[in-house]
Image (cartoon, rainbow, N blue to C red; front, side, top):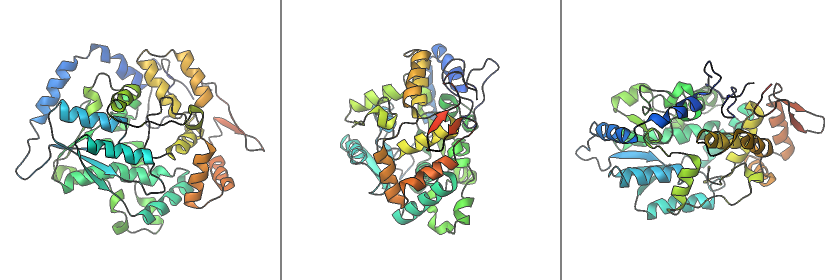
Length: 376
């Protein structure tokens, strides 16, 4: 395990590769932003929009996937108020047991801000059973739900005949998932190759006994469907010079976004602005930490380091203190939902523990083998 020489990105992030200087892809990208002409990029997106005129019978200019959170709120407002477009917002809804009241209120806030929102709600029984299977097979309950979250937007784009899809950040440039890179910095049509979507496809669902007719919400449209319907995903983060966790959170909060109030020690959410529509992502971030050696706090501090708002030493302190944090109440509610004991949950987590990075003693205590910022 090695760390980026600039931030705290480890080389254990899937689909990443450091350059010869030991710098991660995200830091390499950020280092070049100082030379960007942002007005030129605004001209580029205006030229791009000319390729997607609203056709007869088409009510909306574009479609944006939303959760009601910081990124989607900022995107929706920027597209409407800056680009002067009429977007349709597409939201995939969690079951009642999973969605937070905060998440419901944030979607309502978008509606109150004047947007049209279409909500897709997969069958809750299938959703739950797939979540159980995901956790059992991969120790990742979100393997199935993320497929539905990512698939909903292009599916609805086809259904409503809206070829232009706006997405937030470019995972290749801004996070380091290099398989998602397209022809340009804003081309998002290779999003299908990101680790979340490409990790085994739907084979495991079919092996589990489900039929394709039961899995429609989880099917990301194939490349030939993108071509047939002339779909184009555009990363808006490429056009916004101040795109970041903190900036998007402040911008959205000033427009009615409700943020998380729980402590960082329970959530690992430094600013309280991530994944606001549900809370079980907190335990998934903890599990990610035990698999790859980084979690939610690492992502936060990396961005702050790149933006020059945090020293690397301070980032190390925060990662050592809070990465992998997860309150017991989130684990308990998740276990209750999928019908397992707390002991069974930890047994599964321990079985997926990356033993190259962590030690596990007889009492179930997990300790790091690596030094944050140094590696192994």
